[in-house]
Amino acid sequence: MRRGLRGVEKESLRVDSNGRLSHTPHPRALGAALTHPYLTTDYSESLPEFVTAPQHSNWETLQSLCDLHAYVHRRLANELLWPASMPCVLDRDAEIPIAYYGTSNPGLLKTVYRRGLGLRYGRAMQAIAGVHFNYSPPAALWPAYREREGRREPLDVFRSAELMGLVRNYRRHAWLVSYLFGASPALCKSFRPEGHALLTELDRGTWHAPFATSLRMSDLGYRNKTQGRLAISANSLAEYVAALAAAVTTVEPRYAAIGVVVDGEWRQLNANILQIENEYYSSIRPKPSKASHHRPLAALRTTGVEYVEVRTLDLNLTDPVGINQNQLRFLEALLLYCLLADSPPIDSDEQSEIDRRDLLVAREGRRPGLELPRHGSARSLMDWGLEVADSVAEIAEILDADGEGYVGAVDLARAALREPERTPSASLLRDLRAERATFFEYAFGLARDHRDYFLGLGLGAEQERRLEDVAAESLAEAAALERAPAPPFDAYVRAYFADV
Image 1 (cartoon, rainbow, N blue to C red):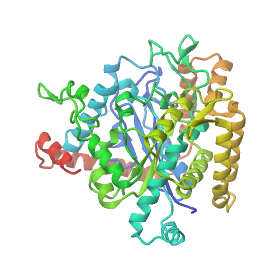
Image 2: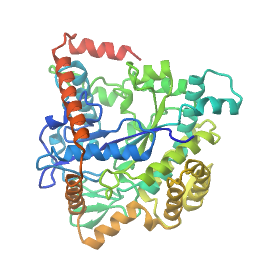
Image 3: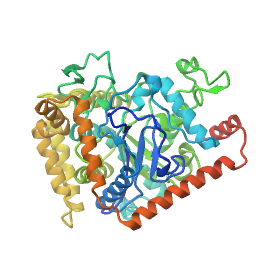
C-alpha cells in the first residue's frame, strides 16, 4: 500500500504589481502552454497551472512543485501569483482573457472550448483556482489485493472496478475534505458586486459567509444548475462512460441558443450538455493512462482506470505552493480507506443526499451543531467525521512505518473536527479581522510574501537548465504543430468527436 504514485496540479492567477488580473500573455520564458508538460494554463491566459510528474513520495511531489514556483517567479517580471482560490480584483467578465494556445488545430480546440465555458458559465467563475491531487496505489498492490479478494478477472479489469469503488466512496466522503481543507469562506466584492443571499459584508471590500468552508465548492463557485441535473453514475466503469458519452452527445437547448459557429467565429465546440468530458465538474474523476492517445472517454473504455483525480481542494493561502505535506498524507490515507472499504452502488436517493451534504458543508460546515443528511436521517458532522478519521487512522498507521507523519496528519484532522476554529476557513476569517484587512489586501500581502520567499530560494543550476530546456522544447513542439499540414479546423473537430 505504501509509495503509490501521486501528483499535483495547482492553479494560480497571475496579477500585476497592483494586484489586478494580468492581461499580459503567458510568459514565453515559461514555454508553450499547449505542449509544456509541467507549466500550462487553465481557463485564462492569466491562470498558470503547475503540474508535477508522478512521484512515489509526498516530499518529491512538493519539491517538484516548489522548484516550478521558484523557476516561474524568476520569470514573472513585476507580476505575482495570487495565493487564494477566490479571485483577485476582476475587471468586467468579458475582459478576463481566455487562454490562447496558438493556431494549430489542437491549440484552437482548447481555446474554443474555453470560449464556450465563458459563454455558458461566465468567465469570472472560470477564474477560480484550485488544487487537484492525482493518485494511484502502487502497482504491486493489485495482484495481492485481487488474490486476497479471491477474484479471477484480468488485473486491469479488477483495478478499474476497485478504483470505481474508490470513486463512489470518495463521493460519500468529499464533504470531509471540504471541511478540513476548505479555505474560501470570503471573497472580493468585485467577484460578486451584487452580493448573494448567503453572503454578508465583512468589510468595505469583502463578502463572507460566517460558517462557510469553501465558497469555491458552493453554488457561488463551481456548482451550476445544468450540470446539477446530470446523473453520471460511478456504479461501474461502463455506466460512467455511458453517462458521460450521453452528456457529450445530447444537445442542451440553452447552449444551442448561443450558437456554435456564428458569423464565421467558433463560439463553442458544440451545443451539447458538455462540450467535452472535462467540462463535467465532480469531486473526483476516474482517469485513464496519460500515455493513451485517445480522448478520455475512449481511453477509459479501452484501457480502463489508471488513477483518480481529487478535485475538492482549495488553495492553502498560507503555504507558498498552495498545499502541504499533512494535506497530502491525509488524502492518501483517505483514498486508500475509500478503496478498501465496502462500496455499494449509489442510487438516486443517496446521490441526492451526497449533493445536499456537499453543498451544506461548503456553505456552512463550521456552524455549531451542524447535522448532515445520511441514510434518510441526520448525523452530527463532528461525530461522523471522527468516525471516518478513526478508520483512516488504521490506514495511516500502515503508511507511517517510517514515521513520515501520516498518523499526525489524522490527529490534526481530529483536532479540527473537535474545534472548527482550527480549520483553514476559520483561520482566514480570524486573520482578516485581526489585521483589519480586506480579502484583497490580505491575499495581496501574501502574494508579495510568497514571491519574496521563492526569489530567495535557491534553484540548483542543473534544475534551472533542465526547466529551460523543457521550455525551449515545448516552444519548438508547438511551432512544429503549427507548421505541419493539417485539415481544416471543422474537419479536425469532427474527427475528434468521432473518437467517443
